[in-house]
Image 1 (cartoon, rainbow, N blue to C red):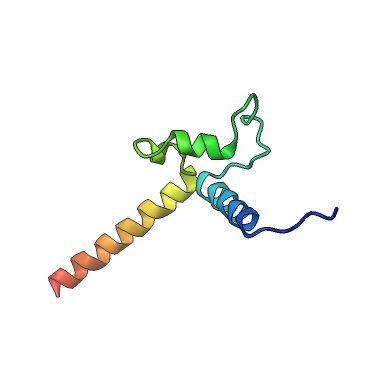
Image 2 (tube, helix red, strand yellow):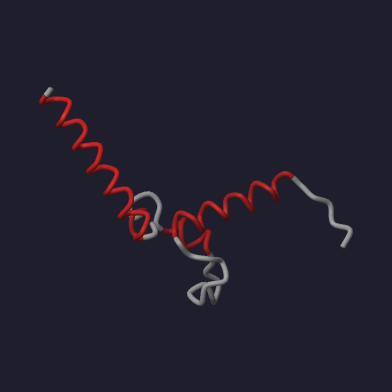
Length: 79
């Protein structure tokens, strides 16, 4: 194709990949039509509604880890 590879393109690609992991959505999902894209979707939620765009599975894992940390902390207090 002859296109020059630029660092900012790499950064953008990594950012989109992180958004995919964070939201559980892909840029090709059906919801991204008529001008809405993954970046705009995530950006619209910042900063107040960021939890609304986080992948529910990721949220469950985070809550599970928090409960485990609380259990460990409680056990250490009891020692």
